[in-house]
Image (cartoon, rainbow over all chains, first blue to last red):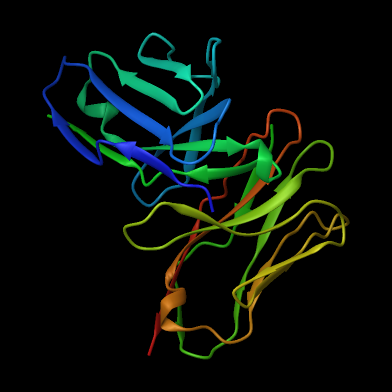
Length: 116
Length: 112
């Protein structure tokens, strides 16, 4: 199946700093990618839909100025957590939509963010 | 909005036991239905799917049938293995936007 990578896999930062997480589709082009947040022992919560060449669509309650999404190419979407605070600590997961495979979503391995 | 209810885990089984994980959903329209699996330390992987009523999805010995009348998509496996230990997520998806709505996940632990 298609492969999606995320970088970094783990990041620790100080409160007030910004952190960028990359999501790449390695062997297919993805016009649409999704960003999720997963709390410990909980489900995935969709944060936003990232569309190549246009603005991301955020879910209700997600601060767009806090979580900046850029989908500048058909294989790369980035999520930047701005002015991170301890409550932003979480597991962030991206997925990429492969329209060539019946619109199946392929998930990245996730990024563990810890804000001190 | 759409929602998914999955049975809470953890579910602990012995090898070769029968596994059922219940999943019911509320959704407008007729979504496609998915089961994803997350093995320890790995990302989510699609386990199986069904795109219309009465369809049966199957993979790796797992099966689930799209039941429109009961809005359910229960996951079953007749004989589990230790390697099936993972977290399982039920997720309906709307055709428009392809958004997935995830259930809470069910952790399954299979003991030898």
